[in-house]
Length: 228
Ligand SMILES: N[C@@H](CCC(=O)N[C@@H](CS)C(=O)NCC(=O)O)C(=O)O
Picture (tube, rainbow, N blue to C red):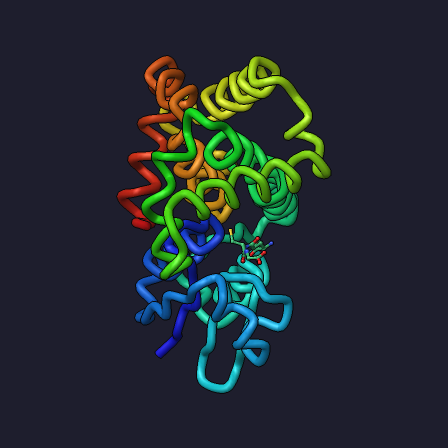
């Protein structure tokens, strides 16, 4: 059986769980702590989760895992056969993983008013560390990280403006009951929904979501076919 090495808090791990569930692939979860992640180099050579172990085959990185699973379990498909649609899916997945992710890290973990909401789940990944220390570590590390990346240098107002643009774009794309790309659910929907789930921890995003009924309907449809 496939074993998924994960942090519950990670949207990339959520993305992989959703793919496995959509394809009805049996799997077991191995929750790892932040300390343990460096002790599994044979499974996660870059010290990141998600990683999977399928028999003797280890695969890390959610996109690499998605492609591995698509090849091994092609039905039901999550990558369209049509090359143009497959390209659009690829670009959405990369946007979710490499752009939306940094919005969720910035808003959920580096803003004082939101970090406490996410804290209990993070405490579980750093057993034995006092709450205040985990809180301070999250704020400090994520501020440094998102500062280098760039989103962390924006004011909170500027970040919220960006998120409004992102939500508006998704709303327009899924308007009328559709998916992000083509006429079927794809990895694009799963990758974007996983990052939005983490973004929704932020009070500012929670307050915005009711203004986007198409996004809510689409998220429920993703949850229904590909539960987390
Ligand atoms: N591109 C990777 C990103 C994975 C990633 O950044 N995982 C984070 C958790 S959200 C992690 O393992 N962090 C531990 C670390 O960087 O030490 C993917 O898609 O799987």
